[in-house]
Length: 503
Image (cartoon, rainbow, N blue to C red; front, side, top):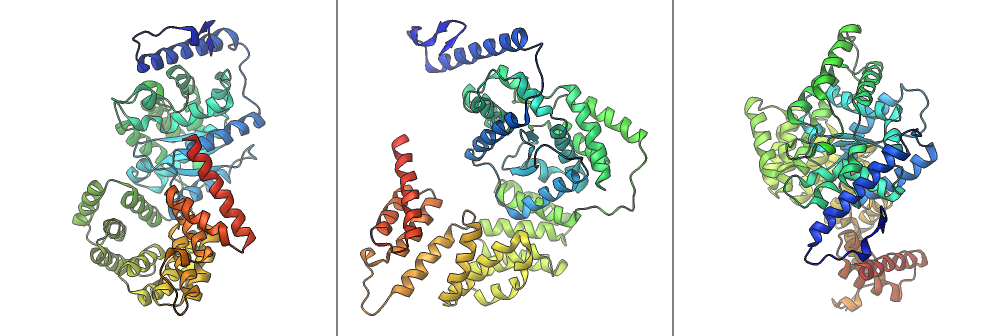
């Protein structure tokens, strides 16, 4: 690697630690990028092409997915995507299809990635008070994409390779979670990300102003109250985008919050007041339910329990707070308490599908399969919970000993949501083993049918237990008659072997 004619390989680092070497490499990288941008490309900057941004977006999404931070919860995702798609529907034709993701991050942040991929942190959603505030933030990020601000920033850093740039962008999104006091490489970089590079990927005040102005228009056109952006920003100002004073300035992608609040207030004064009779496109109760869901499943257990108890102290009949407590108790394996909170929630909202679904799940944990089947009956017609309902019904049938019915249900779940329900593979292995059992069958693992080994291999693979996954997949390949399943087993086994060699 050569930087400014200096060959790193020939440098002699007698007594220099690896940490100092990393720091020097960052400084040299910053210097080279600075010279390139200021001297070489200053007069030729222009937004990159759609096809080039698509390449970067693909690399970016691959990097983000490797971090394991995207929340794969259809219930929560449906709310955020519903808000986003409602706003986008009022835009002129766009070069990219918009996608919306929730990040499992506590920090107060949202970010528009390349290719119109919009990310909202869990901590931001759970700290906002209204649907309009969330719509305001999402509308602002959509405006960044529609104005192609991301492509402008990318163009400033075109000296970097696509892969490196994708890593830098991903680092702006999730790199700050390392917080203060950690190693420079952890806090600042994903891949080869450096301080100078992230500075160039910060929005300018001009970008922010344009995104606010257009975002407000988008929000108002979508029947959300544009006042939500103002109140949402006021909360962000109080917490900062990342919620920590330890985060370096060059990681703050949304500068000038106080100035923006003043400008938004002026916009609201100049434009006519929103229609008070307009029907919001998103149900506010569902918003509260999703907030409780995200807090209970992904938040700190101690903090969230105190939060829900505080809400219930003021409003003992709050269905979202009881729902959140039920999820939290379920997470702690306190099944009886979970059922009690669900009963309170149902007393207020007897037909709410989210509460009914969770009641079914907790009844499975308590061993009451018949009750579980009863409460989830008919809920499979609701798209965002369809696979959850099928999974509950299949588990209930398995508990009742109806193996053939359970098998069909688990097959449906595996075909449509295997990554969310890895235990479906385990249950399928059990069912296949039971169906294969006959008089005098040994309990020895050598007598386990190949198809059961196949499903156990997939189960352990999804659970990241590669040793057991490899064992069962190898066993399945020896005697598996189904060519398609054998091919899949060989493919996954190849991935496991490759991962072991590389790491």
